[in-house]
Image 1 (cartoon, helix red, strand yellow):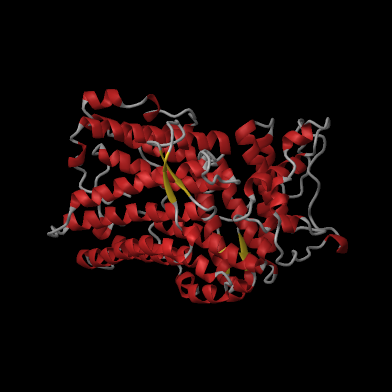
Image 2 (cartoon, rainbow, N blue to C red; image 1 turned 60 degrees about the vertical axis):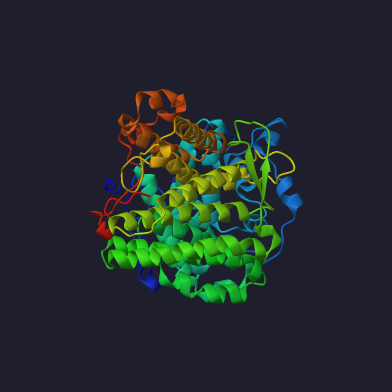
Length: 549
């Protein structure tokens, strides 16, 4: 695995009262935190100084838990409407408006606009929102000097976060944790180097410490519960991706979280799935560190797979909104194989695709261990068929997440947010297509199921569709993380292309080997097949040696 480059950051922050320190949270060394001299020519005025200067400017708590109407989100001003009025808006106004219109909706960060209505929103959160909004806008519409402007504001937000987290009370506020989440999303938007991956990990590690510091009292408000659940999902991804041991308090606090939730029955599927995922992450960590034997790991992973099957069977029975409808629709390049899943709304599509992604990982580890231990009575064709079905179900869910599902299906009204939730599942659907080509199987041998030329052609077509969706997410939603994920799949295909027969290679679509974005990072990933993984130290593999997600 590729190691991280030495960090260019120099000013770590710490929460002194909790003895928490993260060397990754810091301000770029070239940044002057008190400078306000940057003035992008496309906008009329510079970003105002948001540092508290007197008693009138000090931070005030956010508003109480109150609902935000649907009309609020549908009536948010956009950049286009401002420009058509005949005057140039300020840079910070454009960035804030774009963030609120694209990143907030009922079901995701719906509480953030409430903080924007208070007389003085937390300055750090304000800056994080502006940095994120401008980065997303620049990625999709190109704003002259927009990247420089957003990076400048991002640096200011980090400097202010450093200061805020030295305050033992302020670091416990909702706004501080939301700011960390927004800053982590900024790295997914920019994602122009492996340092972006490292920074994202640092933000998630910081958010983990803040969650623990806030304690169970955060469950007493709806905003606190929502932030906890959203942050917990990001921590789960981090643990699974880096083979980390999940923080025990996240599992220990689930009963308290559910007891404090008026809608506990509705939230139960998401909460229960996260607990199962953390159980899997624990097995993965222990196996990598050789802290459990192969037979013990297989026994535990079989139990997790049974739990996941039970979750999928029981979840539709808990509440009607957790069920979905399978529809056959007309041909469309935006839809895979004429199949679409119709859901009730957020967060159901994302939770279901999380289940499918994790179960793909679970079955791969299950099959690899069974082969290594020569376990009898393992139905390998059935396991491969399960992964193919899960990949097809992921693809059938993507249209509603990207706003492409035909009527009468539900479509996301916050496409940027649901596009972000689609990247990881699309990656795993792509690995299943590669597996059918014999390129990523647990045994590194060709999949017997790919003997048919028709099966090979279908796998290549599905891989091409997945890559097209990732390219669309990058171009239309501005999430450049999707470029690196697509490049990882393309790199796997390119590096292993010699395993394909000449006939199979000729079937590969043009977009299978090279994407439209050709940054140096993407070129490197496509050429080597090594994705955006940054390792802190030499990786241990233990009983999972040779295992590929």
